[in-house]
Structures are given as structure tokens and as C-alpha cells.
Amino acid sequence: MLPFPKFSYEAPGTLDELFTLASVSGSRIVAGGTDLLPSLKHRLFQDTLLISLRRLRELRGVTIEGGALVIGANTTLRDVARDDRVAAGWPALRDACRTIATSTIQAMGTLGGNVMLDTRCLYYNQPDGWRASIGGCLKADGSVCHVAPNGAGCYAAHSADTVPALWLYGAILRFGSERGIREVALADLYGTDGRTWLGNARDEVLLAIVVPKAPAGSVVHRKLRARGAIDYGMLLTAVHRRPDGSGAAVVSALGPRPVFVEAERVEDLAAAAHKAATPMRTHAYGVGWRKHMVRVEVERALAGS
Amino acid sequence: MPTEITLRLQINGEQVRRIIPANRSLLDFIREDLRLTGSKHGCDVGDCGACTVLVDGAPQLACITLAAECEGAAIRTIEGVTDGGGLHPIQEALHRHVGAQCGYCTPGIVMAMTSLLEADPHPSDSAINEALGSNICRCTGYTKILAAVREVARPGSPS
Image 1: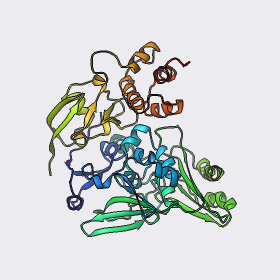
Image 2: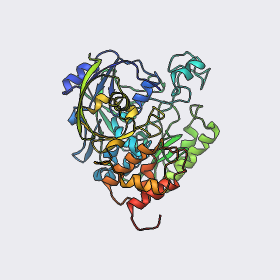
Image 3: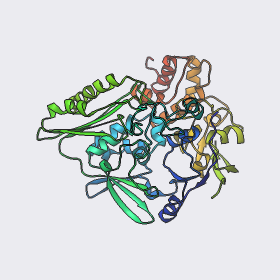
Image 4: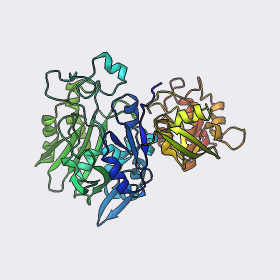
């Protein structure tokens, strides 16, 4: 049995209360909790205050504002995937939501939670006793990265299924804090170290994901995983085939920051992605094979576009 | 900051009010505080589906749900899957097809399939497969479970 650590719990009823609580040191937002709560059981976080979004109705639901999709951060993945407007205008986002874990987890987890998902690694996402047996890792409890012992940082992999598609759709993230509202391009949020991969300030709470009217052409999402359910991705791929013959791709689960590449001719996109991708030993699958599969997954995604 | 909360919710139609620690999981609340032990403790981290219950009609993994998050919710467990003492059609079909062997995953599967069939009484095979993907069974190989669910979803058609 894996008990939760001790923590206190608040469910604020207004955004002002939410921002005040989020400024408390040691606090963390629960938006679904399907990754956070197992991680707390594994003692990956030492938070002492969990802040629930459940009473804030304004953070749940899908609306259209001036042609853009505005999705409250606490909207479940299932509600996003079942929304007819999402399916019609941003089908790759629907497809990405439907590949996450299992249908039960899609009914619990949220889009905001997915965008802010912790980075993952074979040596990090383990119970505390397992981690203690190898002296911990750079991201938790230890000082050595077992993926790259001579490397400069933490390479834990960005694993948020919806992010490659949201990136190519040009999504904007709306954060709130006691200092006001701030919007950040999703493409600018993620950093290159797996410990500090989120660029928002600690007290800034993700309120909504704003997805502009989909660009011309077609965006397609693919997920490579061992089983048809439950698993996090070995590779997450989204491609954009543009009407002028060019293309763009975002490939993730390679490191803390998703990899973005463009090609003037869409035929060159798979080679460009393959060249840019440097899989690390963050997964239980060979890095040579995963690098090869970057090319294959981009080609498969383009074939479906 | 409160480390204890007063929780009010409905469980199998009955109103319940308890003071609980903030870090109580819904599964521990159901099994330890309410002594409803039909929901099973499997992987404890949201992978296996043995603890699946319905929260306001939607399937949820009770082991990775905070009881505190269920304030005001209506929860249904395997004990409340039917109103009276009889079996749910899914339970009857699982029994007929020998869709339960060790039985540990069965309550979670019954709840997940109940949620599926309440939303869509005649789901396609791919919808059934997708929903069953939430629940791990290490005994049956799923064939008999699928046959049971198909029989309930499409009575009279070959399974």
C-alpha cells in the first residue's frame, strides 16, 4: 500500500482566493490529479498544501471567443474530446486527448493538468524505496543523472500528449496570479532542464488554454506506445501539412522540451525531425530504435494528413 | 490550513457526513471508513482499474482520487450497482460466460461497463474495447469478458 503524505487541502470559491493560496510556499494545484496523486504516493513532491479547482466553474468548459477555442484549465480530457466544435475545428487535439492513458483517466484528468504535466523518466517515476536503492536521481533525492551521468542537467522527458498538437495550432496559455493575468505562447513555456521545464512563475495558475482558429492545411497527431492503453508515449508526434507545400512537426517524449522543426518541402520534414531528435535513456526502449521511429512516425502522420 | 475536512456526499443513495483527514483517498474512505470492501485495492497508482467507482455517473479511480474532491458528489460502488439484492445484467452475463476467474478485477470492470452502457446502451466493439482498456485482468485474457459485455450490449447477436 502506498499512503499519501500529510498535506492540507483548500478548495477556493473565487479566483482571488485561488491566487492568494497559490502564492503560499509549498502549495500545488490539483486539476484532475491523475499524475500528481500517484507522484505524491511516490514521494516525488513535498507539497504541504493542495489547492483544488473543483469549485471554480469558470475554469471548466469549452467556449468559442472570436473564432478561437477557449478551454478552461480544469476541463476534463473527455469533455474536450467529446466537444463537437473541437472535433470539427481542431481534430488533432481531440485525437490527442483520446490517446491519453485510459478512458477512465480521460474522465478524470484535465487539459490544464496535461499542459503542466511533470516530465518523466525511467529513474524518476518510481516508488521512493526503488529510487533510494539507486541513490535517487538529479530530479529527485539525488545528485547523479542515471540517464546521462556526465551530462549537464536533467533530461526527463516531456510527456504531455496534447502539447505537440496544441503547439502546431498556436495555442496561448492564460495564467493568473495576484499580479494579474498574463498570456504566454505554449511554444515558449517549456525549458531544457527536466527539473525546471515550466517557464511560468511558481504562483501563476493556468486558467485557460486559448487555441486560435486552426491554420490552413491539416494537423495530425500520433502516439507511439507499447500497449494500446495506459502507457505514456515513447514518442509523441504532430505534423502540420501546409497548403503551400511546406510543413512543420513537433516531436516529444525526447527530452524536457518538445522539438519543433520546419521544412520548406513537406517531403523533407521526416528527415529534418530525425536529424533534430536526440532520444535519451529515459524510457525502457533503445535510443537507436526510438530515433529511427521519429522518421517513421512523422512519415505516418503525414500519410494521415 | 486545514488538515481535516468535513465531507458530505451520497454513497449508493445514502447521505454520509464524516470528518476525515485531507489526505484520505476515496478508496480508503470507502473501504476503511464506510466498510464497503467491494471496491478493490490493486496497483494503488491508477493503472489497474480495480478500484473503479462512479462519481456523478463518470468512472473514477478511487485510489488516486482525494475523498475531499468528492464533496457533494453522488458515488456508486459495486455494492450499489443494483437497487435491490439482485445482480446487474453485466454481472449476470459475466457469470454465464465465466468472465471472472480470481475475481479481483471484476468489481472495477462491472462499474466501468455500467458507466459505458448507461451512456450508450448499444456500444460498438471498438467502444467496448476502449472502455475495457481502463481495467487490467490477468486471468481471463478478456475474451469471456468481451463476450459478456457484447451480449448485454447487443442481445441476440452472436458474441
